[in-house]
Length: 477
Image (cartoon, rainbow, N blue to C red; front, side, top):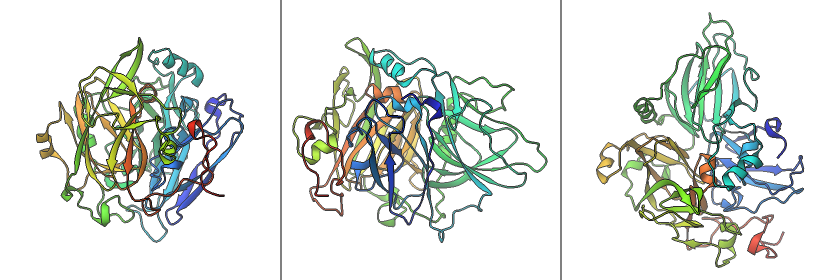
C-alpha cells in the first residue's frame, strides 16, 4: 500500500434514524493484494457478514471494489473505519465515523460551535509490508518513529478556536500499539462521550480508544499549539504541558471514575430498555488470559494458551455453507488451561441471549487493550492482582460505562458484563496490532437454533466467496 500517510481520509457521517449506510470500498491505488475495511465500534446488528474482518468477510480482490451495507440503528457516537487485513492498518487508510442523534433527541450538553474529528496514533516510517515481514520472521516490532494527528506530523494539523466558544473533539486512537494521552495547553476539557455512551462530564482523561471532548478556550489566552504524548514520548519543538505520570494507580482510578450519564437521551445497550444491568442473572463466566511465548522459534501471542491462525476460508462463510474442517467450536477454552502455547483457529461457542461475565487477566508488565466486535459491554470492575469471585464485591452495578474496548493494566484484571444479543461470528482481539496479528485474538460464535431474520440477516446477495466457498451461491440477485 504505497499511499502511506497521504491516503485520503473520508468522514462517514450518518443520523440515527437512517438504518442503512452504503460504503463503496474502491481501489484507487490499484493495490496488488486483497483488502478489507472494518468499522471499529459499529455493531453490525444481526449482520456479521459485513463486519469486514477476515473471519467473517472474504477480501476484496486486487483491482476490484465492494459495497458494504452497514446498519447503524440504535447507536450514536464517534467511531472509525480502518483496513483490517494483513498489516494494512500500518499504512493508514482510516477515517472517522459519526453517528448522530435524531434532531429531536437532545444531547446532554450545549450545541458546540464546531465539531472536529481527531485521529491520533503512533507511526512507522517503514512500509506495512516491511513491518509484516518482521512479524512473519518471528520478531517483535521496534518502537514507532513518531505520532501522527489526522495523518500529519508535528506542527502540520491545525484547529481554529475562538475564545469563549465551546468545541467538540471526537478523538480516536487509530495507532498500532501505544496508548496515548491527549491534552491542550491552557485549555480545560470535559469528557462527554466514550465509544457511543454519553458520560458524566469529567476533566480526567486517560487510556480510551474513542472519546468526545468539549473544549472551551479561555477568553484571554492567545493562540496556542496542541500536543499529544505517548509512551515513549514523542519529541516536541517546545516543552509540552504537564500531564499524567506513568503511575498505574492514578490511571486505574481515573478509568474507574468514568460513569454513564443515566439522564441522557438516546439509544442504550441495555436489554429490554432496562438500565439495571446489575440485576440480571449471569449465565456464564469466561476468563481470558493473554500470554507471550515462542512457538517453533518465533514470537507468538495467545489467549488461554491458543495462538490464533487464520483459516483458508472466512469462518462465518464456512459456517453458513456448513463447510467442515475449517474451524471447530470449542477449540479454545473459556478459562485458562495452563497448557503450553499452541496454534489453532480458535472459536468459542456461546448461546444467543446469554448474559455473560468476561474477565480479562493480564499477568504481563504492559497495559493491554481488548476489543469485541459486534457489541458494547459494561466495564464493571478493574483492579490489580488476580481476579477471584470475591472481586465481584467491588463491581459497579449501577452506572458503568458501556463501550467496545477496554484496558487491562499490568499485573491486573478487568471485568465486563455483556448481553449476547447479536447472533454472528465476532472477533475478540488485542488492539495492539502486532499482538493480534501474531495470535492474540479468537472468534466468538453467538448461535441461535432459529433461522430467522429476526435474529440474523441472511448472507448478503453481493457477498464475496473465497477459499472453500468458491463457486457456491448466496441468494438470487
